[in-house]
Image 1: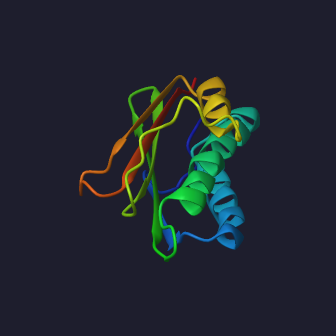
Image 2: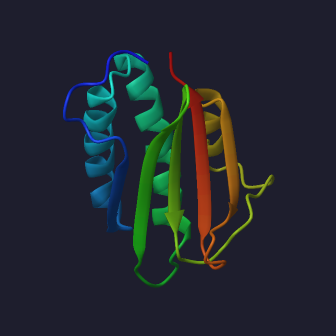
Length: 134
């Protein structure tokens, strides 16, 4: 990763309502944080897109008939960037038969590693995205 800007926070965290109109704010805030971390612009754009796809899945699937919160956290683990997108809605295992969207395919193509599991609270979903950043 390139030189981190002085004063840039080491970690990123954002909590927003899980609503479609809020998704752009994640991309903007995460992009700004990645820029402050010295991430190359193309890497920042790809990571932000993968996170946007994970967040869009929360909006679409996590809180059927209700409302809830979407949490995005990012940090560094040595030379890798780790981003977690989490909700406290209903856990739904990834379906291999749902071919409507291409979000999971896109996430896998943009990141080095994608892990989807129940959240630590046990009710929601946690998507962990990892990407090496040089």
